[in-house]
Length: 191
Image (cartoon, rainbow, N blue to C red; front, side, top):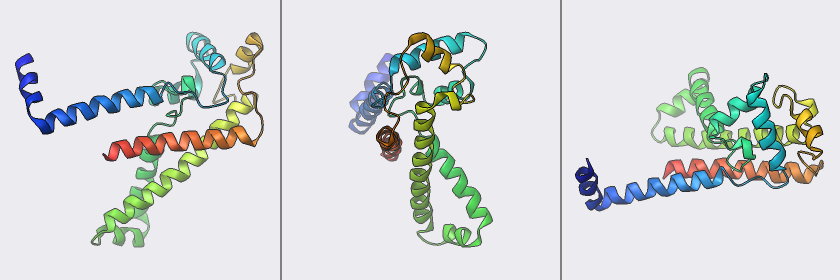
């Protein structure tokens, strides 16, 4: 088995692909550790620690954290992951079946590229929407019991707010950070 690996490294194209894959893994893990500006990471980590060990199970956030590779636990720039792209792809597939013009476009020469471009635009729209919802839920955790069950208890016990800035600056920075993270992951996937 070791000799097979060593032989595969001797092939330049395969070696380049293996190194690229390892670099992508490192980049994704780093992006899952870089916290979005303005979020108190200590509060989030304590909430995840307590909520996953208690009765609440973490709710929607625990499932979202699972799909993001643990990035939500840090409110990392890669928190949204590639889920908006997957959702946009599914929506476009359904729309091509329902809307005749899109169906014809998909079958035309070069139509797949147009559909892919529309999917990318839909991904940006979903990122903006989901990023905004996440930013608002972090600013007002008491209003989003489904998303963050029990976080108000964690905030009270620690005496530290989850987010210091309750204004639009935090929302804009968060939306831009999360959208950029997802678009970067999408770009990596296209390479």
